[in-house]
Structure formats: C-alpha cells, structure tokens
Length: 159
Image: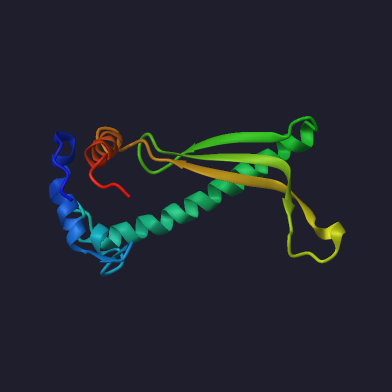
C-alpha cells in the first residue's frame, strides 16, 4: 500500500529508501542488513563513527543519570520516611528530550517459580522505572503521519 496524504509525502523519499532495505516474511518485517536503514541515510556530514561514539556516550549517560537520581532518591527516602516515590527528569540528547525516572522506595513482585509459599512475594527497594521522552522531533510530523496512515488504511482491508 502506498499512502498519499500530504503530510506523508514529505517523508516519502526517506521512507522509500528505508523500505527498500527491509525484508518481509509472513507478518514479520526486518532489515536485510541490521542498522543499514539508519546508517545508510545519515544527514550530510554525520558519520557512522560519530553515531557509534554518540551511542556509547548515550548508554553511559543514561546509566549515570540513574546512579545520580538513585543516590539523591535514597537521600530523600532516608530523610523523609513518609515519602514512597520520587520523580526525576534529566535532559537528554535533543533540546526537548528527557529521561524520566520514577523511583519507588519499595515494590513487591511475584515469584511464581518459588516452591516455598513464603518466597512467592519478593520486596525490592529503590526500584526505578524509566521513560524516555523524545520531543525534539516536533515538526517531523510523526503524530500527523500516523493519523493519516490510520485514516487511509481504515476500511481498506476487512478481516
């Protein structure tokens, strides 16, 4: 299917280039050559070496941000016994991107593999949940493109 709406057309050249590097087997779509869709179409002046270095830095940054937030959250929990959750936001990558980290003082998990009934529930402390917000792509039109594709697809195939 080829989508034709106006807000799809501004992405068609890159989309077609990416699509040519994808392989379809039944209901699974994969790259013919891993990471090629991304690396083959980098903007002028951006190299694979730069992307790889940035990727390594980003991984280290995300881990370090968790350590920093974890240490501060532990201090907050220690000083205020009534606080059960701490939220944090750390700027990341693009101008409007962020790492959201929610830290729970403790959280109970089920251990369905435990044979002993007393071991069926595990309590872990300083449990972190992470949410990466990528907002720097504003103007890239992802929301509008998804809505247009949904609208064009509606009714095109019925089960």
